[in-house]
Length: 432
Image 1 (cartoon, rainbow, N blue to C red):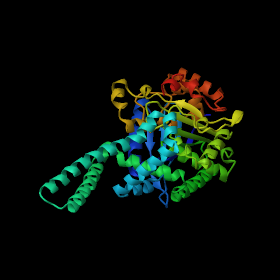
Image 2: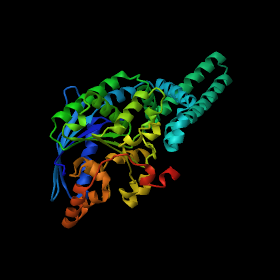
Image 3: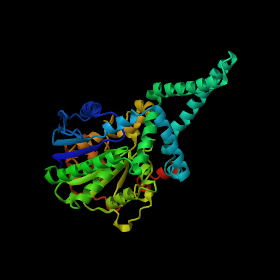
Image 4: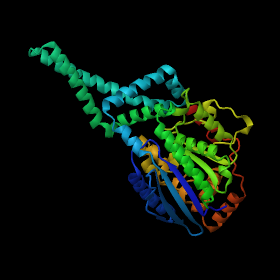
């Protein structure tokens, strides 16, 4: 099957950048994608739904021997996220520290360390940096208090002034270094994932339910050959939740016509699934692991400190479905293979940039290419099952492309049984 119409449903993760910024990035990266492969891609203007929760646009992509139309839905949470980030600094700091230590004493942080030390370091780093900044602010406040004592100011006034100075200095440092440290953003993210895991954010659950209804409606009405649900970063577990709830609304969701594919990229499932109270989420993972009408592809990268690698979203949550397991297919993405060599050594140390490479244009042709997944003619399951043939379709001469298409159209692309990380990359378990 060659995809002539694809419907993408992209779920925003915990990113305060809204529709306008995401659309600009998408447009810029689409142009890079077009130049890389010598294609023509025409992007439509975004149209927002009346309630503002979903924005949609279209893409028309043309090559010498194929043409694909893509309907693209952007599911929005930025209003909730921006509201979180507008909280007073002192409230964010105190709440995040309190939650972090609850994670420590509950053993959840230890589970993070065992699952992926890079991610555990990432969520611990803001607390370490906060401690250093607090020590520096306390030192200045202490010196200020001693100066007041030296000029004869009463102790009660000097101590109160020193405390005020400590709060002011620390707050100022946190505010004006945020663009360099992302400290408050990461702390807010920690607060949100804790509250979401404990079902303390009903407005998020209510919106996910509405998005699940949108998916059900789309699956029933769309003439697309496949519907791809894309969850990047925190969108991985949000997309999982949405799809599982949609299946509860309509158990025949994946049997109406379009093939339903869940694509989770740069995921961090354990920040929800490792909480003891998250049994409903783990049951949703179990449901998707055995659902025959759904394909689930999970892409991970060792170089991305914000995703769990190597991690099996099913076995890693102690979920055992035995021989009934068919999802997910776990795919390792090597950013070294899709970034130009002269750029890679700088790129690899820009952690947020690395994390977003999953949804940005490649610099080198490769089977993993977000925009080819969105705009190309090959079904996603086939692309991941036969990556060399998918790359030949994009870059080969006419004879090579014809042979690649024959391989794709005759291949079995079922994800039955899932895929062990060790089978994809034997070194992954050893080096983490």
